[in-house]
Image 1 (tube, helix red, strand yellow):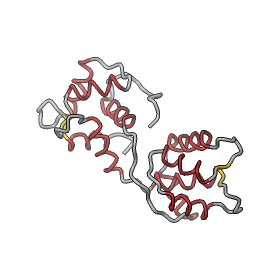
Image 2 (spheres, helix red, strand yellow):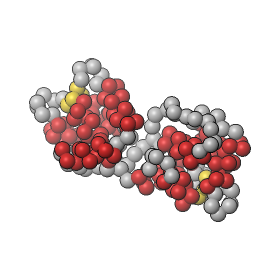
Image 3 (cartoon, one colour):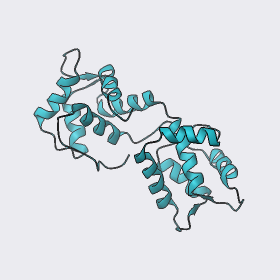
Image 4 (cartoon, one colour):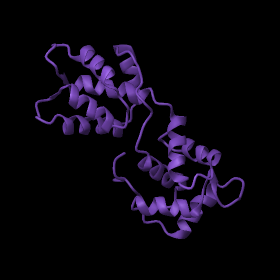
Length: 196
């Protein structure tokens, strides 16, 4: 994911702090997903893609359009999709090129790339994403996020949260009062955010 460019260091909304930290730590998304492009699917999927995701798609296209021609070849497409956190194998990339290279010149434009990525974003399972984010926090694989885990993540992400603020984040959502956040509590936190 992108660097935290939208961090607010306020504890006024503890779920928001969890939200930012979880979204920033997740580097990989679910694997390659098969889909069928089409106008009706495109419109439905487009509604599910956030403004930030659209911006990421545009930035990825601009980065991997290495010759700045407004188009990408097979290799650039494959690398761009992987850079966006999705797995893709050579046969799938070749199939996408065949499907979206309407001029049959070995290139696709931004509109085709955007459609491909919107479909991939829309096909993600939010619960899988939440579980992956939880595993990033639970570095010692105990099934719980401890104060130490949370402090490390905050430090690694450049969050300027005090120990009291971090403890407050745990206390706010620690339903079983064990001083840590288990996976179920983490899921509840993420369901309160705008990301999942």
